[in-house]
Image (cartoon, rainbow over all chains, first blue to last red; front, top):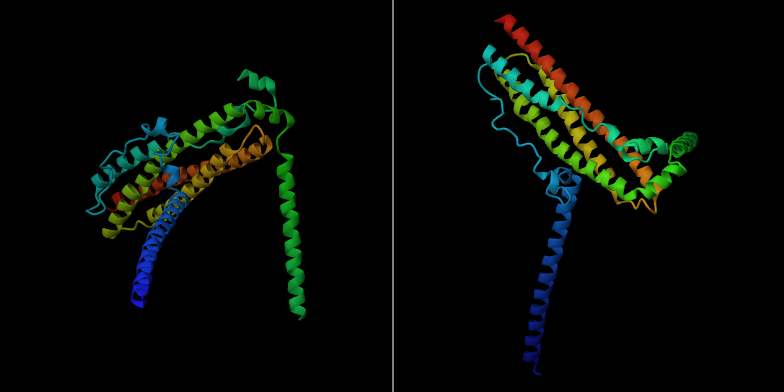
Length: 125
Length: 179
């Protein structure tokens, strides 16, 4: 093998290695970005409101559709009519929010899960 | 040198005091832990209990989404635009602003607390309650405590909503009196 051929072979090997390194580094960067995205998904709280996750199929269609438009205009004069219409809009939304006591602790109680100390009470439930 | 020694003594005392209180907390938790009968019940009804937790988990997610939408709407589509409009009209809406600021803070707390609770409930559901009923029960108790915090956050928001209404009524009354 002449010196020229040897140099050519080395250049070919280098180019080939660069291509392999490019592919490996592309995959590594992609994996890193996916990991970062998943971590952000978990830490941000988005996972908790994501009903497209497995196990939420039955309740997905029970999500209340937000009635639009509901936004109160943020510019314009203030007069009696405006205040009255705002009050109605606010009362309507507020009553929807405060109508039911949410996240009450009873649903996770021993009685609700039927693991209370009194077997008779459990049997009666 | 003396001050360094004093600082060391103070630091050691603080660490020891902390350790004693931490130990006390742990033993207090231990005393309220599971009974033998409950251990048996959890083992026997493991799948049933987990199914119930699964239903609670799914319903909570739905509630979080629906409630979250309403909470957001109250803040971004109603309170903030009115506050902005009052400011543009050069009227005094400071009471409304204060309540809105509290509400936004409590809404952030609610989001964080719900996330913590959801993670705890999910962790509880992953525990093998046939082989580790005590660990399962401890985790369940933790989930209950965190759910209670979410409930309190929700109640705080409800109280802010009522307070905003009160501030609005007061604002509207004083506006009508001036006109």
